[in-house]
Image 1 (cartoon, rainbow, N blue to C red):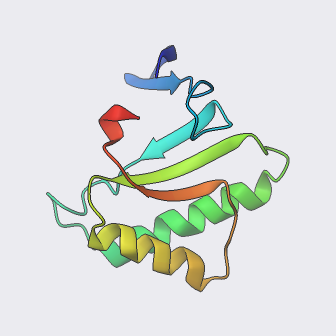
Image 2: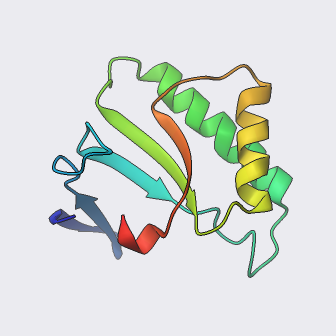
Length: 109
């Protein structure tokens, strides 16, 4: 997908990708993120899932008016991290379709 805009804030780059031409997406406002540090640096997967799911849930609940966004957790395999995130998110009764857990190569999204 084409890069729409690159912003730099506090020495961090934010890339916005336009997914409007992708048949899988009906939204161009997508934030994809990996389960950072749970593999290589062995950060506790359960703790990472709890923190991320709580914050994602809070953000989505506080922003119900943002119907054209997607937040996607991505891993290249159906890893233990993905399974833990899914279990954690669904355990709380969450079912917001704006949060997606997907097996994919984040560099190709």
